Picture 1 (cartoon, rainbow, N blue to C red):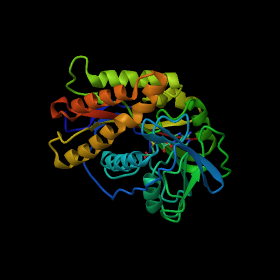
Picture 2 (picture 1 turned 180 degrees about the vertical axis):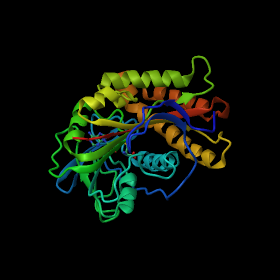
Picture 3 (picture 1 turned 45 degrees about the horizontal axis):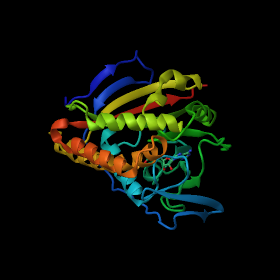
Picture 4 (picture 1 turned 90 degrees about the horizontal axis):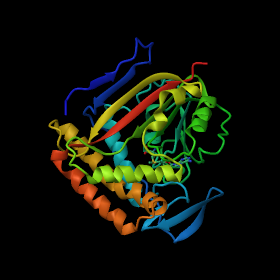
Amino acid sequence: MSEQPIEIDEQKAPPSDDEGETTEEAPPRLSSEPEHHSGSEESKTSTKSLSGSFLEEHFENGRRYCNETYYMPNDEPEQTRLAIAHQAYLPVLDGQLTLARVPLNARRILDVGTGTGDWAMAMAERFHNAEIIATDITTVFQPGSGPPNVEFELDDAEEGWTYNDPFNFIHMRDMSGAFADWNSIYAEIYKHLTIGGSVEIADRGMIQLKNEPPDSYVKAFNGALQSAAERAGRPIGLAHLDRPMIERAGLSFSKSRTFEVPLGTYPTDPVKAVAGKMAMIAALEGLEAASLRLLTRHLAWKEEEVRKLCEKVQEEVINPDARAFIPLQIVVYRKMM
Ligand SMILES: C[S@@+](CC[C@H](N)C(=O)[O-])C[C@H]1O[C@@H](n2cnc3c(N)ncnc32)[C@H](O)[C@@H]1O
């Protein structure tokens, strides 16, 4: 793997923030400590009350889910995975929290599907004059925790957005597979941005191997996961980052970058190797998390079959000769008028 970023698709002389599309390997740099908030395992299927809202809990295949729809669990292992994934993202952006140029005087910032809220809390510390609203359908975050300028809210982004004050910046990370209709999400984003405001959407593709054995388990896993997600009506992958689709909502292209995030300690640069280790831990922990519900429900696999395939995928991914990586795409769009 080359040590230098590789540009794949350079756009014409972009004005100010608009920098076109590139593909690069994740640059080294680690920063900040993980923040992890634990949840609670209560009963088999239950509801619990939080600030007047009733939260569902669904237990299946040994994992806890927040509803019948979203494919990823919300239990403690998942929270740990999210915290590690947040740390693995930082070196990709050279320690920054976003590719967008968020003005220092930004007044309102929205993080949709905030998870543990690590990104939102870090943003709140950097933009201490801004009000950060961090939403999710589940309370992996700890309401009332974090810096005073971050507010965690229970909110389903698939329901109509009801904010009556627009945002200077809207952020979504790892939301692939969460929504049935990205067109309506982009329409809401457009509606709820200030003129000149930006949105950043960051998502990861499927695990890839540079040196892939024929008929690899990784390929079988990726294929099964994608077809199950299609059947679920909430596709996973990067198709929702399609430029014409986002532009149809009225948003103007600013930049797009694609990174290859190494999984494992095979990079020769020691900092990249540490980052690769974290990314691999998050990716391996994510195998079962991403596949158990999708494959058992939508492809009628048995739990044991899913776990067995995950083990095989894990063996392939941890082999340093395979040089596993995850493509990560980050796009930034603006509302110009
Ligand atoms: C893979 S996690 C990513 C969390 C966080 N953005 C991050 O990067 O660490 C996806 C999050 O989206 C939330 N989510 C799923 N569907 C949602 C919806 N319809 N509205 C709001 N949040 C949603 C999940 O509960 C979960 O916390």
